[in-house]
Length: 283
Image (cartoon, rainbow, N blue to C red; front, side, top):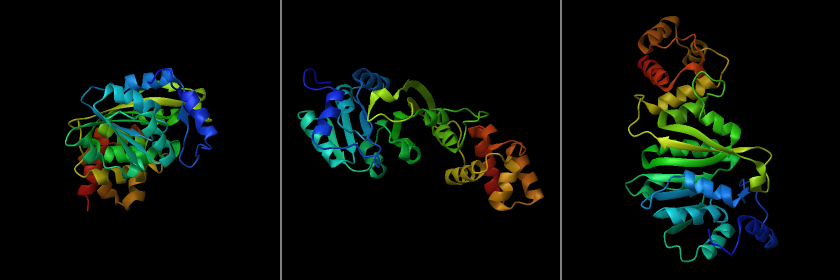
């Protein structure tokens, strides 16, 4: 980070002085703790050859640290005023590519250039699920991700089967990656302060996948339906999903080896793959 010029907290004050008010709609809560910013950059475990995509790069404080550690940084920011400020701040950083736009529209495969990306970001709470879904959709182009999210969401992302926190997002992430909650972050580390605690979660993407469904779209369509009735057992969820007959349900149970009296949150990724394959085989 540039010494003697600015601090994250001073940047936040300067933005206010320039008439910039953080947007609730865009989920703008800027990190102002320099020690935390370094901790996040270190936790990303970057190499000099890495290509990094930063989601919602804001004032560029984290961008600067990432640029010191990696080969190329795609700084993706939807707020044009913040991106212009970044350009001035990071003038001369030739390995930073400034991208104005929504991360949900960013071409991850093109940015990967045939290799694997590292994704880093302080994620707006309201679009966390959509960002995770996009990352999983392009999992083959990503090596790892270091995300700062709402603490409860981080715990759901890293939840294990058989726990109350395990749900559709847990399964989606677990299918594609190994998730680990690294550390918590209190509201005082942000300006403006959010009302909830955050946490950093690291995703190490599988290559190759340890288990695979024959039809991944069908797998997650089934998961969405069954997790929509969390208090129902799998058998009840399947009846609601496609009105299977008793005989068809017996065939699904036999083929999958999954106890249909279990609850959706009790099944691991391998169970879900076998269940989805058996469901799709019954037409």
